[in-house]
Every structure is written in C-alpha cells, then in structure tokens.
Length: 261
Image 1 (cartoon, one colour):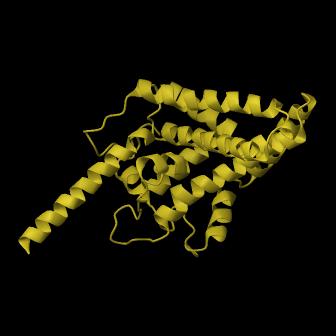
Image 2 (cartoon, rainbow, N blue to C red):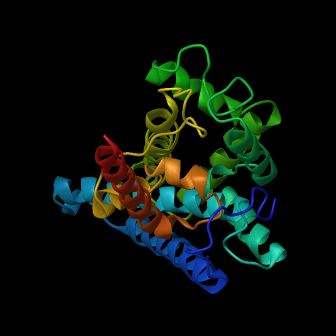
C-alpha cells in the first residue's frame, strides 16, 4: 500500500522522520492520557474538567486513526515495515481494527470517491447522517470482526477492572472516546466532504472553510478534504499549506477571468 496513488505535488515533500516523530508523539500522548485519566478520582473533580478530559481523550483517539490513515498512504515512514508496523499497532489500539481491510477500503475510496464502488459512501441516501454513519460502521464490523471487537473489548474491560480501575473511568476515558472519535472522523472526513456528490469535481470532495486552528481541532485537517484527495501522500499537518495554495490559485484564476471580461 506504500504510496499507492502517488503524490501529485512536488512543492510539498513529506519527511519520513517527521512522520514517525508525529505518529509516535500521538501514540505517546494517547498512552499517557489513558493511564492518567483511568486512575484519577472523578468524584473529587469539577464536572467541567471531566468533560474536558473526555474530549481530550477523544481527540487523541482520533489522532490514532489519523496515524493509521498516514500509514495507509505510506507517509509515516519510507521504510515499509516500520510504516505498516505503526499502522497495525494504531489499528489495534484504536478499536482492534483490521489494518489490511482499512487499507484496502481506503484505496477504493480514493479510486472511486462517492460512488457505488466506494465502501465508505452510503449511496442510498447521502444526506441522511445516521443511516450513513451506521452503514459506515457496519462496513468495518462485518463477519468475525464484530466478534473480535466484542470479545477484545470485553477482555480489555475486565483487565482494567482487575487492575482496580473504576468502571466509570473506563467508560468515560476509554469507551466514550472511541464513540466520539468515530463520529468526529465520519463527520469531518466522510459526511461533510462527500455528501454533495459534485459531478464536476474530480474527487467528488469539498473542503471546509475553517481556519488552520479550527481545522486542526475539528479533525486534524481532514476537513481540507479536496486537498487530501488531490495530494494523497501529503501528511495531515501540511494540508493547510496545500489549502492555502489552492485558495491562492483560485483567486488568481478569478482575477484572470475578470480581466478577460
């Protein structure tokens, strides 16, 4: 799966060392936050800080999937074994997901975006958020994978309980972040970019107009989705640069068109 689509840009090159460092930082922060939040006494904390903790854990959990996505595109590391190794690890940590299936489906998503051949697209009703979300989740929990998730999460849960971790902490800082993360990824990485089915758009994808800061907070710049499809091997942290380039180009085109008129 290494660089399966090939980069379409030469002015923004990915640095493999940076990719590894960014991926390892996300994994490290995910582990540290999990350990710290599982052991805190939530009865002594102001409820607002619990909400902040849940959102932080959710954001870092989304970061795991972003790292999976980077590995699928072969841009965590130029060393294929290292790249795929990190992909397998983050897939397991995220929700015991099958990395090979994720890679296969994502390749199809890029080749046939927002069509019946796109496994991430809900062709029956692309404007129905809930139907599409459940269809999207079902695609990755088919067959034995549903049992893998059920049994695996049960084992992890009771392991935590065996370590004398409060069930409320487990749900607040492990289970709920998985759900919130899935909604975050689906909303900003699938539903909003692809629901329009713009036939005149090569990638059938649209980008949001958020600032770089809010784009990062929303979903690690996944909302700059047209740019991601245009430059599939560009790491997520360089998408704002590509977004700005595309905006500048369109503005130049508008100026040229107005002059010709």
